[in-house]
Length: 111
Length: 330
Image (cartoon, rainbow over all chains, first blue to last red; front, side):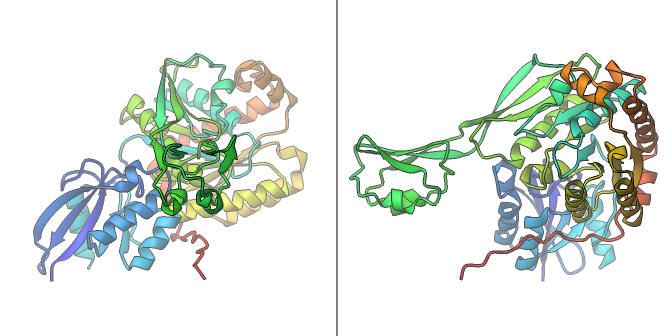
């Protein structure tokens, strides 16, 4: 079964670095990974929380739910986003200071 | 949660306190000047958009650029379509609608843009004004102390939001470039704009005074730093007003893995300097508060020189989520 993993990013893509904040990050890079850890597809989607006046974290999580994401890798989400992720059953993994590619490798390695 | 952190760009240092009036802006201004003189490249950011005053402490009132900040919406009623049924007035959760000279009107300062009135209106007479100017991002590219200053300012009556704080911080990072520190003077409280100040920060310097109220608010802001996994330091201001209580707070800091940077005595010269719109370390360099500030500034400088090492020492052992209260419909 392919899995969808979202990364919190600025411009997006495998070589972009993980963005420092969750709810107001400009984009999510969604990577579909096959059973053997191979990358099946890479998509960059806009985060509606980026432009939100309030409720940015909640809007960001809603987007991840709509995209069918299982895991999100990025900074620690804020209190409201944290709760929403928990309720949606999306696993949040904290990683910063690395590119999407490196974060994916580290995550798959830790599994 | 797995924690891997490496140094990226535009290192944010946030000054926060929970309680207001404990000295955040005074300390921010002095720290910025001390760090600048020690050769650190930095941008000061005033993230207290409701009551911005870091510029006043620094004696800056003329801006190089003032950009509008757009956010929010408010409702208005189209008279030709309105049948004066009063449904909107009854439904508005904010009591923003009233009858003036026989017309139904929305008070745009009270309206939150929640759409409730538009759901109940039978004739679709309600429209919205969007992207209103809700504040400004103000920039001084070079203050008299050599570093740039970015300041957010919210329009009275407009809902405050972390979005403006995000714009202020991003502007500061853009001006400073990737090798610059951003010193963020946060608002009081632990609400949206403070959370936005903390998100993405590398270090939080908490400021407290030896009072019950300040200690209580300090522990609330501390809880947020544990939520985000940001290492924290502490300064106790006006410490000699209640030395025993200062000791209590200091002891708490040490027990809770907070780096105690030192204390500043109560000093009337601080108020005199604020009245003169000059940072106290500039106006009265030899007064006890200034001496304490210089000492603390030196400590902060040495922390920044070995930031990764310091972070490893004071990183929270585990993330402790700050779970908001969930209101479920009955």
